[in-house]
Length: 290
Image (cartoon, rainbow, N blue to C red; front, top):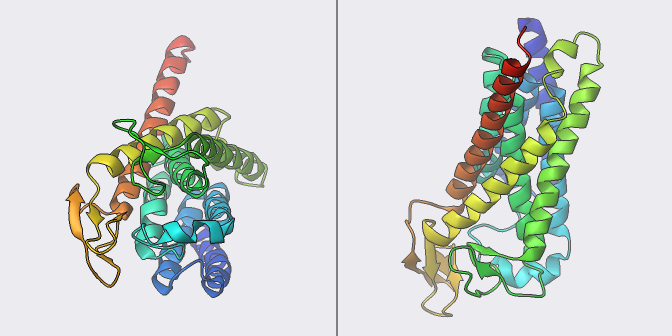
């Protein structure tokens, strides 16, 4: 068992390097982002298994492709976000940290709810990223999730129909990918018992967790996340410096950054999906006792 875990950890490190280094050369990852990718990728694949690790890669690759899609059209909005398209350590841990912890838990304390919780966490990260990258291109301006007031594109807490549909598609994509990869892993010699816990219910659970996590992300962005105003250009931004000088806190708490919001959202998505999986299991066991 220990030998198998060490082997998977080594495979996770090698595969993470194979993904992170080209991403760094393309400008998708910063140096600290490479470290974050190595940490999350190695732990997720090594402790969770191939379905877990490859699902994390599916999230990263799809998100990177969407970030590059119509990049010129999004360039004017990039300065409003705390960070650009080049992901750093904080972003890697915010999006993949909860999943990595769940992978460690599934190796140390196996439980049927962990895979669903992992899918919910990663579905949230995927849904939020897809929603952001597509939503900023919406022909209609976003509306604040709390008041439904029309706000400029790129405003934290703003939602659009395009973004919501893209987020739902991202959550569904991640859940389906995780399920199919789980089926493939279950067919591998000696892996059936580990991967069989990834049942078809993980797809709707990932969708539910991803949608709730994405909505929670928008709610925090509209209420608690630190948002600033640039005294020079008057724009709202997540950055503490803009137009060459410091910005002024407009609303929210300065200690809650976008990375913190993403981390909390993935935790909510994981909790919902894992909790639903546990409830379904208990109901099923009550209806069909051994």
